[in-house]
Image (cartoon, rainbow, N blue to C red; front, top):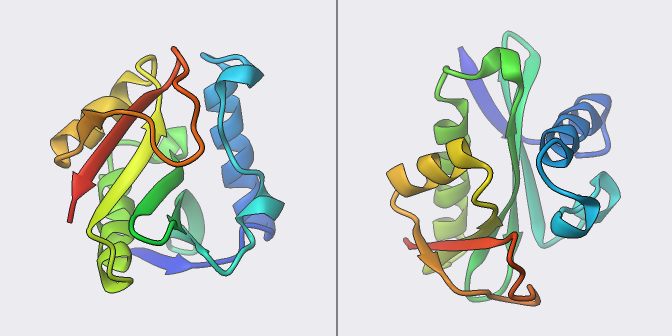
Length: 149
């Protein structure tokens, strides 16, 4: 059975998931093209860090940043061995439910077009390409997407 719960990104499992996310990003993007938050930066009252587990094993994560009038998706990652179990879809559904419970009317995210599987997932979930939001620069490696809740 898959469970999704809020956890600290500073645990060993949280750090391992985030390191896996970093490695996946660095495989296709330079450090200057990655706009991620490290585990310490994810410890904030405005951020909810979610971990998906199966039989106690941490298999994926995502963070919801409360940006006032919208929520932002950060650090969506599923371990390679757990892909194909719909974990990313389940994590995003939980994130969206929590964003709606916070009163957000929309969820935004920044990704990259080289992350084809992620972009395809977001499109299947109803996200559309938008322009930059928040403090993001209009960077050629960035693809901005959003979804009304």
